[in-house]
Image (cartoon, rainbow, N blue to C red):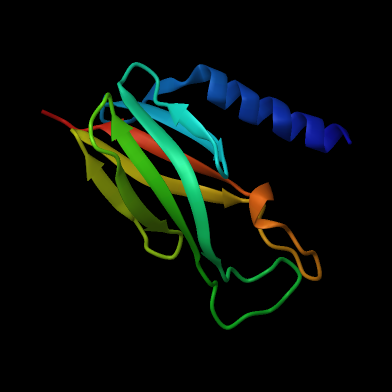
Length: 136
């Protein structure tokens, strides 16, 4: 129980912290978004929605697999009143990023990570993404 509390506290601190500076001095926001949820990116007019968990074939904890597998998600991005854009990101693609109105959107993780013999409803998933302002 204490371990779950600690993890929840750390996640909350990261979300509340909002915008941080990466090693290149660029402004970066990390967001955790539940399936079906819509969030605004700190200090921008960008909103992000976690639309769909398309696939989750990641190798479950407690199972030996030949490949690590892949999680594929679909996000909807919008800036202000502009036309929303749908993007698909994958965990298996190293450095999978999407350029959107001067920002780079990348997938950090899909949670929860699968476990052997544990069924998780798609609705219980969330994603952690990074939104970084591109250099000028």
